Image (tube, rainbow, N blue to C red; front, side, top):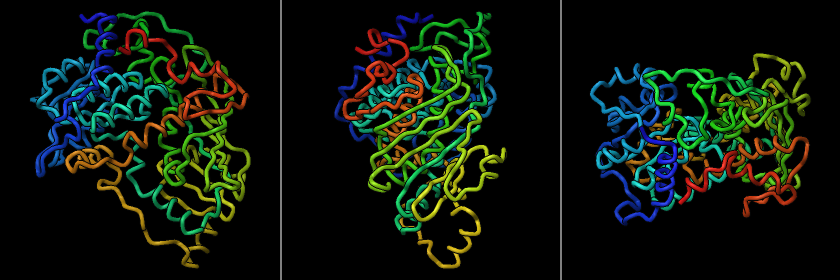
Length: 450
């Protein structure tokens, strides 16, 4: 069995192997060929990846990797001849010449080490959202992907859809006016979060490798309470409700208006601790943005059952309706727009106003390029790999975007205190005690970064 020290040293070596041979730079499949893909993480969301590309004529699934044989077994049975691994490093070493790209569908804390190992071998990378668990990791993944010259994509499938493009076109047509405020909320977390205790040790099942699941994280005894799903609310492995869901809900606004990095952030939440993220939270971010009134846009986030209390042109009954559990209102100087989790089904609110504007013929024809695989981010990525062009939510887009989402989680560590962010320096101008949360909640750097 591989020791944790060996794992950390090995992962550190991957991060330092980014002096790549020239044949790796700009690597792409030859015309009319198929993309050979390895799935790292097969149970859970990895099964969705298998369904999305498993029957695509331009893709071959050539390897599976999962630490939980039991959970992955239902997908293994669909392709019994595909080789199976538990350790992604063994997979990438043994099948190096047979793999063009990897799809990473693991807990957040393992996105960075797996992606950087793949970059070191010149592989294209699709990574589930959020891109990484920390801001430092996001920036490194963007930097190393560009250095490797590979095609990348984050798994926020809404970015492949019509939604954000339509919102941008409506804004460009002058329908919304300048943007004042954006309000997004979610009913997540649907998993335990809050002031939780560390669970006691339980026997490790024979079908599961706990050491490989922990990977670069600090050691914690196995307990079925946090695997395979509830790790999302735990600070060593996941990014909480905002880190998890903002990559969906905030994508239409971020893409439509090029929000960039927030310069001011303030957060508030219920009680939490070093082990778990809070059960409910809200944050407000201020962006310097030319599409905003006076060059500023305010973004308000709510999770865990919290909702905005008042929104311009929106009736109170809508905001209190439990059926409206995930959504966004974009408030402009002329109109207010409502859209769903993925930016689809957008309307000018209230609906009667939408009807009036339709009759007036103000809505423009599409002008922005649409995705080559609407609603299927895995297939979009595969097709872009074969074409040698970047996918829509590539790491140059998704790394800064994930950073924006994670800044909301950092703000919760400084409750009710507005802090000023300096993105060029990756630090806070007025809150140095929060800087450590930009890198990690645990210090693996001494062994992990060579």
